[in-house]
Image 1 (cartoon, one colour):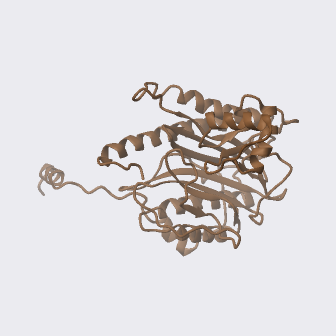
Image 2 (cartoon, rainbow, N blue to C red):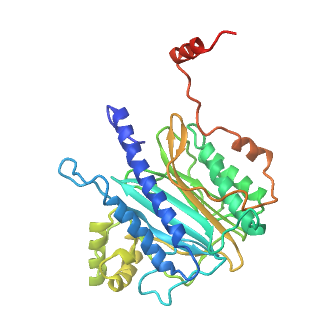
Image 3 (cartoon, rainbow, N blue to C red):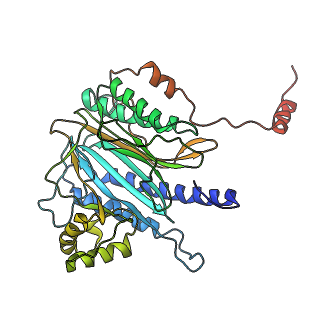
Length: 385
């Protein structure tokens, strides 16, 4: 929930503002990243750009201390740029050589996160590198199918995020969307309830039901916050780790161990000081080379949780969209994420099933009831017939 206090109204307003501020910064970073995506651009440079935008913008807000303490704010999830068959979590290091360079026609996934006073907003976006589709030259075929599928799945999830509905309802609906577009939801992709300084809470929405991955059934409640994470593939939807090195980790807060190696202890101390709760990239640590060595022992003893770089097959297309939702009395409210694409430039011949059309027809927001006083004023102002 937003608040746990005797005067929740004030707290809820404050926390909503923090979430919305984080959402604005995430969207600002996304718009900036889109401009950076062009043939010849280095993936590393784009990742660094995204993190820099978030850090710099965070430095301009909430500069006054509260009760003698500075308000914590910054990158909640390192900027990732995942290209073509790469599904997610690609955030290379300075020492990775040769660096990946974008080419015209690449399908590029951008993934960012920001927190303000611990309240997190995340977003992901998928786009074509180079010449953009237009109404005269629209994107068609399987790329268009997978983009529409990811977009519609996100909209369906948003509309179902209502108090009393369940996570399994959302998973079932997303499965039907994938079927409608003849694509597959990517296994292992999860939408989490988020809380203050918690990016992956215990209440989870599966993108795809698999025999080897189960989550507890849960119902949505008023004032909860969720990251809706959608990744669709024209392949089998079972991404795997490849040769790419994992560079993003998160401190496992429930684990402790007396590390043996000096480099491991140095790294672990720096993680506890700088990134005690949220994900980080090895690139953001003081000594990248030492971090690469030290993280091995930390990982072995489960002191950190890895976010591995995942891949589908070479010829597969993957679309990834992510946004943050507040479940408010007025309805589910999206505070991050940008318009996926112009429907006139991305054309699909696939049709939605009746069940999905029914969900899509639901209003996202409750209509505000007019007060009797305003209604009377309106009626009195109308001329008599």
